Length: 409
Ligand SMILES: *Cc1c(COP(=O)(O)O)cnc(C)c1O
Image 1 (tube, rainbow, N blue to C red):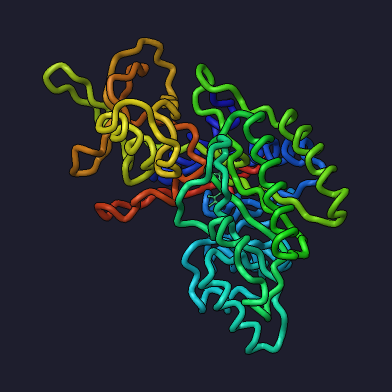
Image 2 (tube, rainbow, N blue to C red):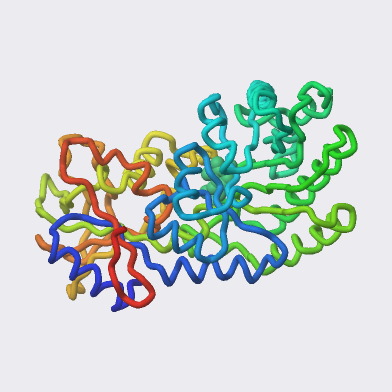
């Protein structure tokens, strides 16, 4: 359901530019970020900016006291540009180069993803004649589901880390751990148990490595409701209460320890709408096609979801994230007074048959010039879309501010 306020902003913007665009509703972002802060006292939140780096969105989330989960040197620089101090930027990513590490070392807390990165950091610290405090991304001996650990390209296996001689990196002080298993979990119970497992891992690191624990980064995973008929909403109050008990017990042992949770999708996914317009309506051998401006090359996720549905039927693994979440994640809302519906395919204006956003859906009878809004367009949306494909003008982006202005920078 679109509020009158949002519909009016969409119509006005399309009338002015004629170009598809993303609209991010600031009220929704503020409400989601506020809910997390309220439900998790004592925890810190980091915004996983790879989800949606659009500056007005980033600013809105940071304005709520979030720090930054940076996955590249470029993202570290975004945090710096917004005035974040080094301790509020955690830089964790696989495959960081020496240049990446040197570029970030004074501006963020660095999390090493491998023994090679620890060696690079040790050499950097030695050259500077300092001791550097760093974190380590750990590939734990357990999964979020509570099963034995798996092989991964991320981090250092817990067994290898615990067996390593801390004297191997004389210019480093290991002061924190980072764990991130996966995204899009809706069970508060599962996440709470997983957080407890990570705290136990932190205790093992202290015991075996003599780590002077300053932070535990619990990673991401807070899920959003893609289909309200099927998904139970994540109970953030229950998760916050359970996590708070675990935190109190951890702090008995490590009084000043920072515990951070990363999230990208939770504050921004529902805030985003992709808005395009009908440019043609045709019928071919019994099928109705509603043709839209920029679909695969404007907001790729619905088309990708449809391709997965067609070519990978059956149960879907969560590891398709962030390219794909669920088949039924999106609603297609035609802005019209028309009440009579018909069955249609939603297609785009690219010269490829894969540019199919939805098939066989019921939609009010569409006409050229109607606006169509797609929901769940706030997270992994603009950034993962091949907007260069076919040299059509790419979509614009706007934040609809809480006081009703459309801002684009
Ligand atoms: C992408 C990413 C996140 C964001 O995860 P969501 O669950 O999608 O919010 C968090 N942490 C890490 C390490 C990531 O790579």
